[in-house]
Length: 250
Image (cartoon, rainbow, N blue to C red; front, side, top):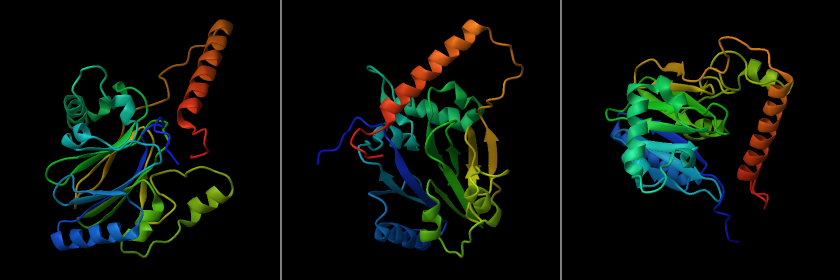
């Protein structure tokens, strides 16, 4: 069956950092043998990453690779148009992440990616209202970043246990609880609209780059309310048309 290549690029990622080359080689063999990833990458010394692109998605190209960026979603919203060089565009985004991550909200659309830096550090950017979550785990100088909680239990030394409170909240129909805890103890989530700076052996820094709550509220007129309703309807229909696979591939 021919894949529908019009779907937006989406991928599951699982990245492992270890200072020990032998331990990293063992992690790469385990990722390869797990059968969950279609591609393995070594973006920087100390890192190995498994990439599982969703059906119909196109993988990252040379421009993103050259800038040390690995996308889970939203790459198509940031790619240059016309004759603009892709490597230059992604390098500009990488410099923004490194020098002024609080300005990430100036970029268009929803995007989620990992920025790998020389020396082993990374910045993980979670979208404001996108589809792909990000989680992280740290033990000493070892790090792991992923988009699926199951990969942490599958590829890392455990034991991992279900978080009793958060799983009880989920079973009752609620969302995430407060803080950065995930449904697995020892694995933490990065909230939407936030970025996390991770370096082996150092504490993880999580900051927001987008704050949805305005400083003040202005009462809307009836005309303004109708305009907002029409814009919301248009945006929702456009997003559904863009993201839903008519062949049921979601």
